[in-house]
Image (cartoon, rainbow, N blue to C red):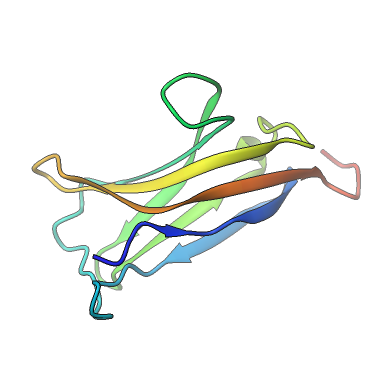
Length: 117
């Protein structure tokens, strides 16, 4: 497999932020998600490892189109502190308990410029 990939991004605290993951095999072909209806997990934390603050954002597996849509909602985003860099992982699990990390990276949080948070 050609993952985990890395994607670092900036997030305006309180906004909706969404991205789509289209997993590929090492040869570039589509990684089918048919066996991964066990769901996806999008976890944001202030540091790697099992300790520290963790927030679960939204991740939805679309087995028909072989993609995972990840979303940070305004409610989830309000739990993040501006001026802080967080780390995250997006994982999928099949019915047999096999877990793959599709994407990992960092999120830099900035206050919404409108001040309406």
